[in-house]
Image (cartoon, rainbow, N blue to C red; front, side, top):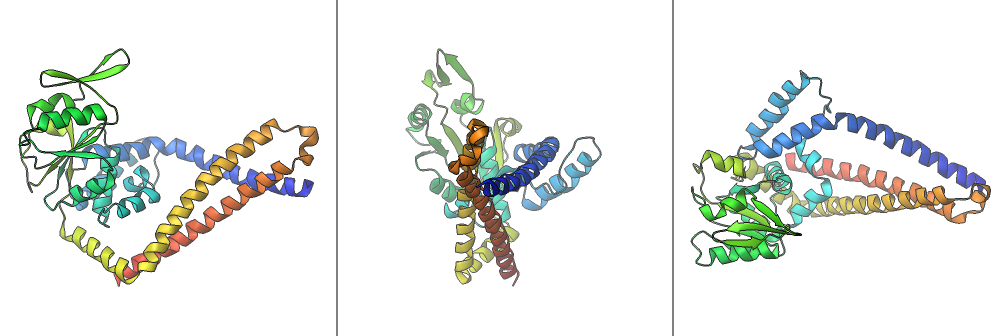
Length: 328
């Protein structure tokens, strides 16, 4: 029992020591990472993939390198904003399988201003209607427009505003500006002549079919403008993804299962680690060798750490095979 306990603690010490070192380094470089990621979400939505890459990976990184701000060498805004499990979930919700669409979805996920999306091919519309379980669809020409907006705000639903042209309805100005007032424990927002109780779960998403809309400059300050227009490169990536998914379906399925397993293992590991630390903290040092529970928890934690490492290696190998299939 003493041998098992010492071995378990020794392995955990090595892993925790490595985790602490990684976290210290990550914390030190977080400022530069967050600077690039937040700039990406705030400013690069209206542009196509090539221009986005040029701005953040060349221009911004070059300027960042001339400062004293610490940052990682291999920054990628997409992987900094979301994890692989979230990206896999987007695919199941109907998001096209290309880098540009994934970047757009990450901006929608993280932006604080309501998204105003240029979507002539309706790919964003299809994805968003699949993503959200409950949503309200309306247009500015809808006779019940104000009623639907009011109900969505009060009930905390997702409001999808379609067919947006070059002018936004002035009624929406307080909503775009998030001009929320507090009265006691409740929040209210002005909508026309009425004050509507504001539910924090409310979301507004605006979609436009216009290919090249000329919006007022203030819209860029009020909204997160997002370009969802399918380019030739984006269409090629989407078609390659469809072909690979059809021809190598088992690989895509294996990749999705591995990502799911990784997340399950990580959740279990976090639970085991918290439980283990609590048990160690409360253990009677004079009777620690009599604690079968402690030894079992140590071994469970070690096993989950091993399973996570194996799943990560397999996922990378599968991803590599899929990428090679796309090239072929």
